[in-house]
Structures are given as C-alpha cells and as structure tokens.
Length: 498
Image (cartoon, rainbow, N blue to C red; front, side, top):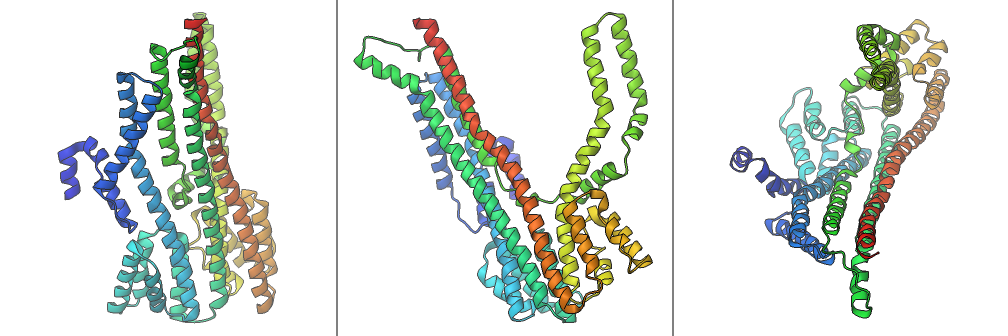
C-alpha cells in the first residue's frame, strides 16, 4: 500500500530520487541506511563536481550543467552500490548455508538439527526463512513435511545446489543408507563453486579500482592546459588563456560529464552476475530446436517470397539507374540469405555453454545415486530432474541402455551431438564402471567427479576471462576522453595564439 501511495504522490521522478528503496535493500542485507547518509552522499557528489568545475574554470552555466549531471547520477550510483551489497550478501548466505548444512549433517544425519545449527551462524533473510522451515517441521506431520519445509528456502534462494542438497538430505532422512562419501562429493562441488565466484568478484573489484584511478588521472591530465596557463601567468610574459572560449567551456563540460557517466556505468554494470549464470528453460529449448532441429535451407525456403520481393525491388532500382541503392539492397539480400546459418551457429554456441553447466550438475546427481544404486537405475532416476538441454539425448541414452544393457554403443552416442571431447571422455568412463566392484566404483566416482570439476573450472574461468577481457578494454576509454579534451584545447591555442 505504501508503495502505491508513494508512486501516485511523487511519480517516477520522485521514486527515482527517493531513499526508501535503497533503505529496503540494505535492510535485507541486515544493514542500516538513513536519510542522513543519503544526504551526505549527495553532498559528496556536490563537493566533487563543484571542485572540478572550479579547477577547470567553467563559467556559471557550464558549471551548473556539470553539477546537475553529477547530482542526477547519485541515486543510480547509490542504488547500484546497494544492489551489489545485496548480491554479495546472498552469495555469502548461500555459501554459508550449503557448507554448514553439510557439516552439521555429517555430524548427525538429521535435517532439523542441521537447520538449527545453520540458523545460529546466519542472519537476515536467510535466518528468517530457516526459522519458518523449522516451524513447518515442528507443527506439520504430513508425509511431505521435509519437502514443504525446505521448499520455503528453495523458493527464496533459487540455487540448483540448494535444491540438490535438499533432495539428498531428504532421501537420507527417510531411507537411511550410506551418505558420508556422497556428502564429500557435494562439499567438493560447493567448494569449487565458491572459489570460482570469489575469484571472479575479486578480479572485477580490481578492475573497478583501476578504472576509478584512471578516471582521476584523466581529470588531472586534461586539466594540465589550465594549470600550465596559470603557472605561466605569474612567471612569464606569455599569457595564454583559453578558458573564456566557448569551445573550451563546452568541451570541458562534455569531457567531465562523459567521465562521470562512464564511472557510474562501470560501477553499476561491472558485476559478477553469479545469480544469472543459468538461462531459463524456455530460452534453452528455443535454442536447442534452432540448433539441432532446424535447417538453414528450410528457413530460406520459407523466406523465398521475401527474397523474390527484394529481387524485384533491385531490378526496379537498376531500371531507374539507382546503382548505389541497388548495391545496398544487394548487400542486404546477401545478409538475409546468410542470416539463418548465422542464427543456427549462434544457437549452437549458446547451447554448448548450457551443456557444460547442465552436464556438470547431472554428473553430480549420478554420482550421488551411484552410492546406493546400480548404473542403469542411477541414470534412469536422474531423467526427471536432468537439465532440459540434456533431456532428448538422455532419453535416447536410456532407451538404448534398456535395449542393450551391456553394449558400449549407447555410451558413444550419448551427448555426441554436442561435439565436446571432455564430456565424451567422461561418458566413456561411465561405461567402464558397469563391471567394477563396489570399492572400484567408489574410487572411480571420486576420480570422475574431480575430473568433472576440473572441466567445470576451466569452462567457468574461460567464460569469466572473456568478461574480464571486455572489462579491461574499458580501462582505455578514459584515454579517448582525454585525447578529445586535449585536441580541443590545442586547437583553441593554435587558433587564438599562433
């Protein structure tokens, strides 16, 4: 209700400048945020922009523009800081929850006791949801009480690792059996995931710091012309002053605003987006159909009327001797003909990324089930929860295994359409486990999981490095802004004094 009244009373502009949404984000993080702190951040920006305008000797109008631009950026920047803190807190909560639940369950295999231990070491939203789950366990005695209780946490923290952990803990709680080695597998997975995210966050933090330092240096370097003029004014007969020129005033204002916007943009958008690492099932299915069930020639046949229409338009342009426009239309037609093939190639590239993540999660589930089930049953029982990108291939794999249980061909066909050598090698290892003793299977599972995590680490590091490389390129952008500013200053000097 308060949110609706606020929006009605102040509108979008008032909502943009309001501090209440920022306060709510920090509240979810377990931190306090006040109007006083919000005002102090506005005051700091005002001080920076006024000081910079004074340093560059901007006139009243241009100084006002720079100060106004800085103040308009404050709410966006402060909200980005709050959201970043919120995501950091969520990562810390999930990491703490996963590890503490495993440690407590290893000590005593009871979900209620594990939740009690975990609630003591976490705070904020996570602690509140754990308490709700505990209340559900205490006052509900239905058959699916564990699923209902833990689903409250899964719904708030939509992490595949939390879901996998809960399913395993519920299975042990209800059915018993060996669980120590399987918990070690889960713990290994959680450790690798946490290390990857923390390493990536640290790299991004370093890049943000480098960018901030680079922008400060660009301010100083671009202001060198003004500082040199002031020095010469007191010790030399040479008097060069371009600060009153309209070109200097406009160029300096644009330079300062560009740097300001660039700084805010990098601080807002350069983040370790670990919560959105996995795409939606709808997106994956769409790309899978495009990559493996769509022919480029088939798409071109459906587009044939459009090609004919473009061809007739091209003939008309030739008839009227509009050869330049005919060339443009010909390039467009060539692009339209090539586009289906390009879309399929892009879809396959995205699917390969989904396969790396999906196969890792699926193999982890298989390894957990192999502690108590034979190979065929372990594979079959993962079908319902397997990643959507693998469902078609896994369905065919299970069918071939049921038709020829001891044959090697199903293992060579499984996941073969993706053309990922590391995954194919891992699948072949599964075939070698079908005739092993229990002890050998246990050792091979451990080796298989380690190999899988090495594969996942290489993939994640490669993907993160692509993002880091793109971010590092941004370190050179302030240099372009400085070049722009110095070029304007030099042009004014040459025009007025040479």
